[in-house]
Length: 192
Image (cartoon, rainbow, N blue to C red; front, side, top):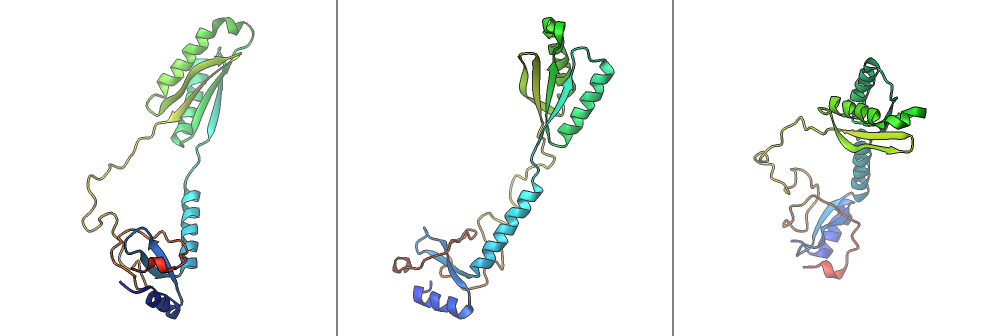
């Protein structure tokens, strides 16, 4: 433990900031770091994570009540590709003229599509009719290819800081959480 005034003096001498890492701990834990640099690195990490995450899109496949089996299989294969890419697929069937009297044919085709794609998708919304249009939405089945580890690797217990994470002097060694510093306005309350 280091006195507050001594910690502030050390921060000024090192040309870095005294950042409060764990304000709720008793005594509060502070760390010497370049706060601007840390904030910049966090922003870059968030941007990189955001750029690597793919937003799923809703792709539409249009069907007709009088679709041929071969044409249907081609549309199912295309939907399988969309689902493989992580996109949702909406099947839309528009009834024309006298086809409205035979909606059960459209429902059979929708069930045929659902059964053909059952191994790569799950039904997000069942076939439903709105006016002359019947729609069904399928979303990709999320199967994890990596098995979950049952226990963490030895020496990497959660909550312990990585070696070399602190370049300055710590005001206390009681906290073992990753730093989530905010600019600390140092007051007389933080002395222990």
